[in-house]
Image 1 (cartoon, helix red, strand yellow):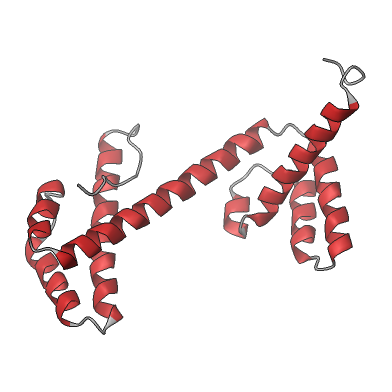
Image 2: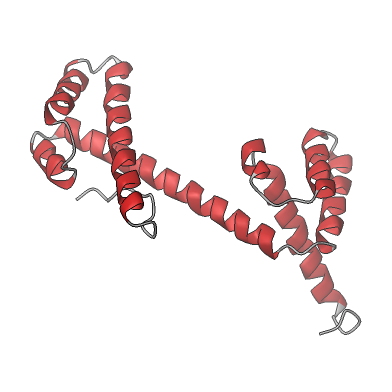
Amino acid sequence: MSEEATSKSARKRDARRLKALGQQLADLNDAQRATLPLPDVLAKAIADYRRITAHEAKRRQGQFIGALMRKIDITALETALDGLSRNSAATRFAHHETERWRDLLIAEDAALTTYVQAHPGTDRTHLRGLIRNARSRTEDPAAFRALFRYLRDNHQREAEARHAADPAVELVPPTVT
């Protein structure tokens, strides 16, 4: 459909979608935005948007970002943004899985055997000591954090090993059984 044949309502929907996409870009942190293929003018406009505090000025800058986005091809940008959100979801999933394992290991003695069977590269003796510390020092959050860090690092090593063996495998740890 040509530009002239597009209805006014369709153009407005597209403008709102691009403005929302610009808002998503502005909500990212600097490191995440640096990984995206942003044109310099758009990157500067987003940086200005983040600096602005006045409501009306922020609204106008958002409109400007939407206008800039209408002039560029956003398919590569949308693909990169989708990749970022998938990575973020995978990170959250890994964090929650690690927390579940930690809580299960502290609560049940049999969970250690289950964990070691699921993760054969685990140092059982070291893990048993961390669990014992977490159980005995319930008022000390450092023991819980030490157990969590060990589990997180162990899951990360296993995920990296699986990924190195087969790059098609995602870097997400297995679920708690």
